[in-house]
Amino acid sequence: MSRLSPFAIGLTLLAACATRHATLAPASAASPAAAVAQSAAAPVPSVALAPDDRVRIAEAFRLAAAVGDRIWPAWTSAPFAILLVTPEREFLLRHPRPSKDFTRLGYDSLLQTEVLVRPPRFVPNLLATFPAVGGVPTIVVGRPAATHRNSTEWVVTLLHEHFHQLQTSRPGYYARVDSLGLARGDTTGMWMLDYPFPYDSARVRTRFATFTQRLDSALAATSDSTRAMRWAAVRHARNELREALSPDDDRYLAFQTWQEGVARYTELAVARFAAAHYAPSTAFAALADFVPYATAADRIESSVRAGLAGSSLQRGNRVAFYPAGAAYALMLDRMVPDWRTHYFDRAMSLDALLPPAQ
Image 1 (cartoon, rainbow, N blue to C red):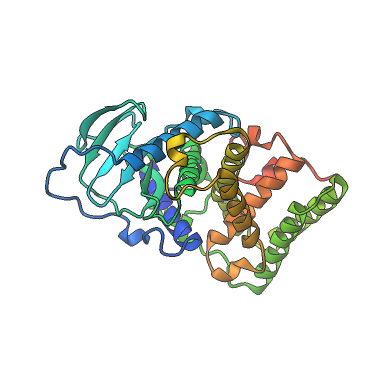
Image 2 (tube, rainbow, N blue to C red):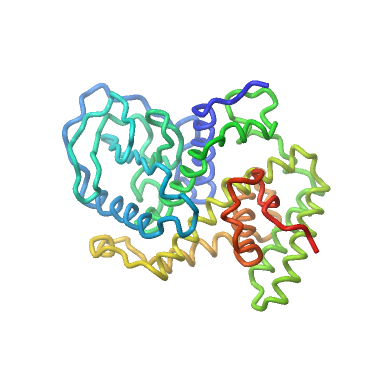
């Protein structure tokens, strides 16, 4: 079987992220076909980062440092390379192996990193993580307005993407993706987007809707006894959904909930942490579009819960799996509190983190 290269999978993750954000926020990210723009021929003037850009990026670094390894073991070991894309130029920060097409602007004491610049290559509304520079998982991101977010949402989303950096930088990640056996001869990695999941099957839609509705009900439980009963219903619904799928289809669903669903969960976990344990910098809180982290957390949770309603497979793409994965992870927090310590050493499936049913 042909093994997928990290760069091929990275380009697919770029397209997947573009599709995800375009679905969740209309007109936000570009389509995969338009993701890469032509390099500008003119040299890049030595212009520093805009003040608001510096404040937002500094806030993301500061929040990540405050979170540390509290949410994810060894999260601080992941790269936090960022490529900020503006219409005029691209700024590279905290990258361990910059390519030769960048010009150094100097050290930024606020960001505690060298800042490098080059002419724009990517469209300015992109939001994705892939090996964009030097083979290192890099967050490629436009400004908040271009990505249809306020500054607080933008910072929290950067931590979502930083979690993808942890995922893809773990030893053996690409080999494990390949071992799922879902590529079916595709060596580009596009199977992650184009896999022929039976979205149109009435049986699968019905069982997926039951599964997500059971998740929503379990999240709403207010007592341990009710939660345990509803969690048992979630597991039963998941087993019934599995019976309606081929083994390959079930692995695809499990992989998407494991990868993208947990990234969405992480976004919420970061916003909740910031709301409870963190104070934004004075400069960040003074931005015109700042909202409190508690507000951002409420909006993310509402979006996840809304994504569980009805038969979301009717949209006909894998984005339906993301709120399901986030909700599943939230229930794991309550029912299997140590699941995150085993997230990377089990199969690429949240089901693999569950103890045997009693």
